[in-house]
Structures are given as C-alpha cells and as structure tokens.
Amino acid sequence: MLIDEQLQCIKQITKQIHLLQHRNQLMRQSFLLMRHSLLMLTLVGMIGYPGFALSHSSSMPSLKGLPATRVARPQPPSTPPPNGTRSGGALGESAVCSKVGKPLIALIPVENPVLTASAHPTVLVYVPYSSSEVSFGEFSVLAGQQETTRLYHTRFTLPATPGIVSISLPNSPDYDLQEDLFYHWYFKLYCQGNTSTRADLDVDGWVKRVALIPQEHQIDTVIPALWYDTLARSAEQLQASPQNIEFKNRWHNLLKFIDGEDLLQAPLVGPVRLIEE
Image 1: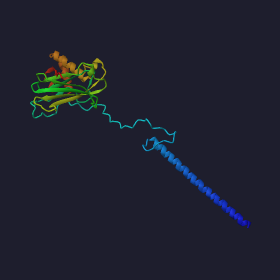
Image 2: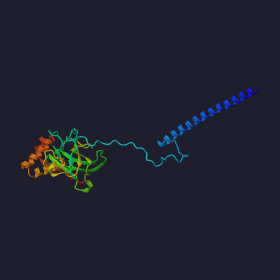
Image 3: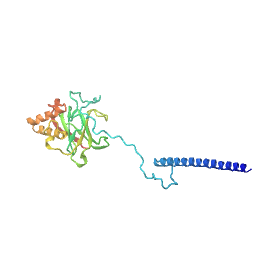
Image 4: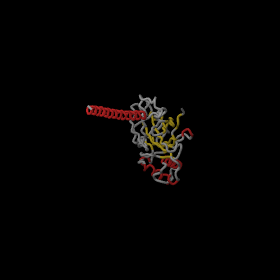
C-alpha cells in the first residue's frame, strides 16, 4: 500500500514537471514572437509606412514634419555640347534668299568652353546676305545649360552689304552675364517672303564669363583664352586700320584657328541695326 502511494506521488510530480516545462516553452515562444513583432513595427515606423500609427508608444521617433523624398533631376554635363557654327537649315520655298557659296557662319570655335571676361560680350557672325534679301533677324540669350531663363531678346536688320556683322548685349546691369555660368545665344535670319515663325537660317553658340585673366593671355596669343573679347577687339582694330600688318596677321591667325580662312576677304560691315520693340 505504501509503495502504491509513493508511485502515485511520483507520477503526480512528473506530470507537474512536464506541465511546467511545456508552459516555459510556450512562454519562451511567446516572448520571441513579441520581440520579433516589436522589431518589425519599429522598422516599419522608421521608413514611414503610411498605414502605421504610433499612437501608444511615446518612445518611438516621430516622422511628422520630415520632408518628402524627392527624385533628384539629372544634372547637365559640366561642358555644353559643340556650338552650331554653320547654318545647315534649308531655305523655305517662299523665301527669296538665294543659295550662296558660303553659309551663315558664327566666328567661334566649335568646342566649348568659349570664354569672355565681359559682362556684355560681342558676337561676330558672317552673313552672306544683305538687308534686301533678309526681312529681319533675331538674337536671344538664355541663361544656364538648362536654358530656363531668357536674359535677352531683340530683333534686327542687316547692313546693306554682306559680310561679318556684330551684335552685343546692351550695356545695362539688367543684361550682365554672371561669372562661371554658361549662356546659350541664338542668331536667326528670316528671309524676305517668310510668313512662318521658323527661321530660314540660324547659328548658335555658348559663352561663359570668367574673371579677368592676365593681359598676355587675352590678345597676344594665337589661341586666346578669352575668345569673344579677343575677336571683337581684333575686328575693331582691323576695321579702324585695315592696312596695319600686325592687325591683319592677328585676324588671319584667329580665322585660321576656327577653320575660317575662307573669310579672310569678307568685309567687316559693323553692327546690325536693332529694331525698336
């Protein structure tokens, strides 16, 4: 009898031990599940999941007021594409501009950057037409490589004689070029009889204003650093003294650098005539 009672007692103790072990196992699993859930909720809250609200936890970081993530716009290349120095457009059927041996030519290098130290640089263009064949022209300057702002726009008429013309930005603070910023200019011509909004001929180029550099790099080199300034000054000197050998040689070297030796005999006919708007 005593032995039976002892066996029953042992069975009861063993059963209690098994129950305790099972309960501990359940508690451990529940703890792991709770820890995993809290970790997932924390991660979801940190990345700003829109359906999750941290209404019962004051210790969680708040996302209120944080700026929304924006996709960055691709930046343009550091140097603009090559300049459109020679007009390749076909003349319209209604235009009276005749086909000539030389195209419309911008007197700048093809590759950029092409620099100036002037706030109001001068652009020189060879035009093979006179004012009798071209109704009017347009000159515009846009700021930045994305061309989001128009700095300047004007209309003009040509001189009576074909040749190399010039056009400059107005000498006003409103039209100053800012340093270290690229600007894109367009020179367009509309032949007599053109009734559309599309130009018959056009060239375009880029210009970047930089700080003034030493004098020896501005004028007296075959490949000047400040192209726009050097070319404009050389044209002025040659126009004022067309027989000066030094001025003629310098002009020859500049044209040779841009493969414009066929323009050596082209006359310098001065600035275009702006149309009051």
